[in-house]
Length: 192
Image (cartoon, rainbow, N blue to C red):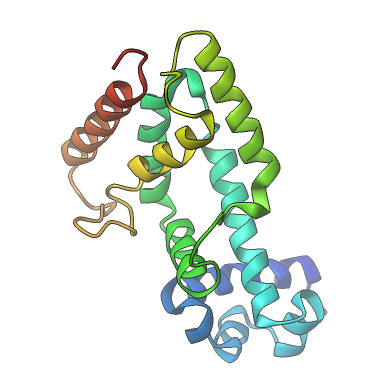
């Protein structure tokens, strides 16, 4: 019985996400991805052209997933950073993929070019919230989103100190989210 091509593609993307988040771009092996996905290497190259193309597809998909899971609300930056914390605990691969992209692909500059339109819309939303007196206008609107993202990564897999684990006690997760929310509130409120 022939396999469904979309199911095979899904298995390849899932296996690739696991492989890339664990080993990075250079360390990932197409053979392992194909074996894990129960597919063949020819399918990878037919759909994605190269290992780099496969990484790009996986990274783009994960960025889009986080954007969908955690809609940006400049009127509630404290809530937004707490929701991002939860998303990173549930889906740490997105942070690991971003780390590998930063280390192996884009050591400086904008890493979010694959979702540039979305980021630009966020900047405009921040400007509107600043005009409404909800966000400190002394912080350039272009800098608010990266600062919020940096704050939200405090206990993510990118943390140089402590990385949250889904198995951590609920009270620990709540304490961290409260700290993130309080820090965002203080950092971005007008007149802070």
